[in-house]
Image 1 (cartoon, helix red, strand yellow):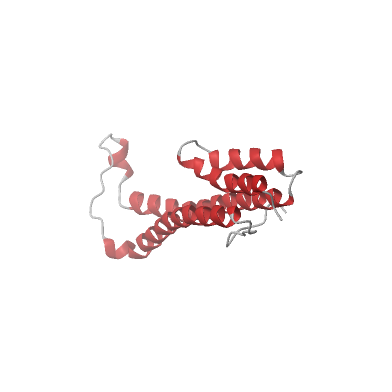
Image 2 (image 1 turned 45 degrees about the vertical axis):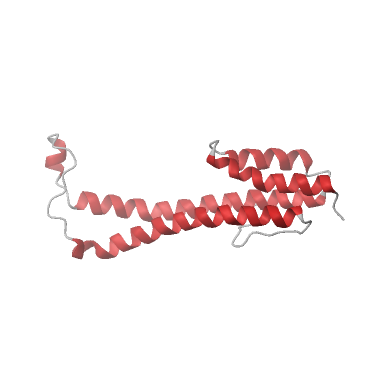
Amino acid sequence: METSSEKNIATFTHLSTLSQYIIPFGNYIFPILIWTSKKDQSEFVDHHGKQAINFQLSILIYSLVMAAIALPILIFTVFNNMTFDEFYHNQGLVIRNFNFEDHIGLITVGIIAALAFVGFKIAEFFLIIIAAVKTSNGEKYQYPFTIPFIK
């Protein structure tokens, strides 16, 4: 049976990942600080600290993959329809004769990757809240689709 203190620390570990919306990299810094300071004192806190950190690292990997798909497609689509002569002679970013039919597949893949990224962030927010609630009830929660970097 976990003590109230262990539940609170584990819950706060999950909720500390929401600091990413205020402090850059707070979703990594705060859970790591809490987990490393309390992991030897409680198996429950150790489990939830690992879960929170692994989930954040997994979201990072998934986001990087989506960016690796979307950005080259965006760059290719934009620069394919622009002459470098116009850009070189300081005429700015001028796209002429853009034909959607020629690039609909690339545009679709780029939009899907961007929407998947937004979906990851929305799902991340709600999964963190679910994890915090279950943890505060004393349950061992495991995030879905999490790569176990720390075992």
